[in-house]
Image (cartoon, rainbow, N blue to C red; front, side):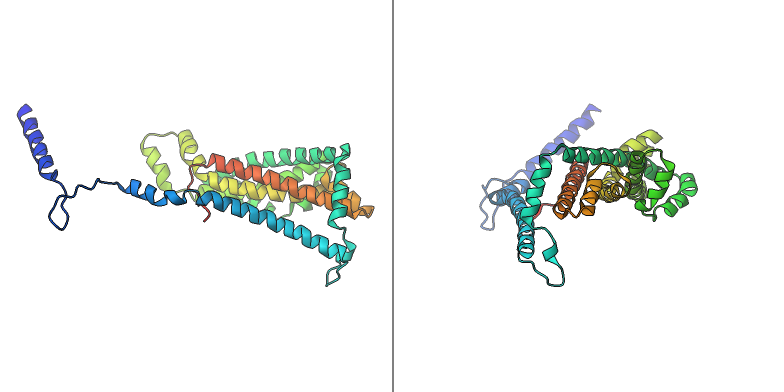
Length: 312
């Protein structure tokens, strides 16, 4: 056995010796140029423009801020000039009036109470919808029995607008608060459920087959294959669900609320306080923007292993 090993080693040594001569150029002289691998060449080629993505990000942010500022400036010009060009801008408050009203609201405790009440409702309803929607979506996507029993029922309820359930919520729940949370929950449930179900069914079966051949249990299949694989689809549903939840929450607060941004905005409309109406609208927009941004940021953190496109 040792003799065979020695012969193999000798053959390998001989092959290395014959493969070692210097490379030659067309003139026949040895090429003494140091070898540079592909990665080094690529790094050296792109290093001068290494800060291009960072510049692109700042340019993009500047454009976004400028577009918002341009819209605000146009609004001011149209309302101050009492323009009537198909639309009656002369009946709307100016930007300066809205800013002054916003300052007055920021100085009152009622404004912060309304904001806190709306945030509590959105967090409660959306949080419950996220948990139930993900679990139900996985169950409907992986179990034929659950799909047969609950799939048709879910598809029958899904087209009903959540705001149409306000009378049912008033009759079903003993307090307005519970009814508003229920409407918010229902509004954000189905985007999460449907997105999770589709993501579960779209998983390549070869992933599950591969881990099962290694002796994985059902729990390991769920935790190591299904859950990581559906995360992009889940967070897409969560992002859509957050937007729908705010729409239905504000509508429910306007109809049956006692506190909240939606309720306060509607009250301002009934007393013809239009600057306060726009304060409520701006507050809703800012809160929706922030909560949606939190969901998107969480999705990026959880799915950081996904390839990202760099804006050019």
